Amino acid sequence: AQSVTQLDSQVPVFEEAPVELRCNYSSSVSVYLFWYVQYPNQGLQLLLKYLSGSTLVKGINGFEAEFNKSQTSFHLRKPSVHISDTAEYFCAVRRMNRDDKIIFGKGTRLHILP
Amino acid sequence: NAGVTQTPKFQVLKTGQSMTLQCAQDMNHNSMYWYRQDPGMGLRLIYYSASEGTTDKGEVPNGYNVSRLNKREFSLRLESAAPSQTSVYFCASSSNALIGHGYTFGSGTRLTVV
Image 1 (cartoon, rainbow over the protein chains, first blue to last red):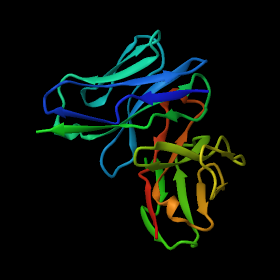
Image 2: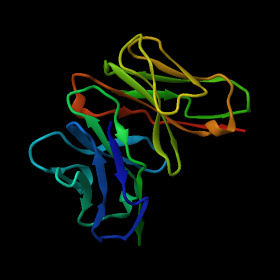
Image 3: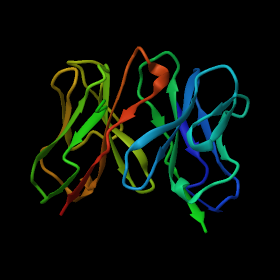
């Protein structure tokens, strides 16, 4: 079975400052990794994903994430946040090569301070 | 492309009333899912359907039933609503040919049971 732990439920950060949202996962098999974003009163949309290859993946809106197999982590980063980045961010895993259900973390709410 | 369409967007029910949440996708996806989202709990899987004619329980199936009417449609029924079912419900779909793409989500149904 797979599990996902998002280490921070809320992260406040000043506008234009860098941010890191932490995610650790557990799985006995190889997995795909995802970050989804949910803007206020909207559904979830895919931010970025790691399937294979380069461990640094880039997504929309200037976000990037790094896959670290030895630490079973997939932390999300942005060098300079904007007020429009206010949202909830979900880390997720899915078994590789299987059309199986995705396991989500509990989410991290990003608060951008003016 | 409409993607995943959920209806209704908002609903208020009295305790004991029944209702069906509708979900339809136009992407020819095999798998469909129903999640509920509650503050601090992340997304919890209620039921899923790996293909037309099959359904399986997720993490929190009690109080719900589902029907995979055809490949496009996957409905969620509350037979006797309870205040504990107040939540935001999301439908999602995925393709077994595009596993690395993750899910496509609907915009959600906000349900209040009074």
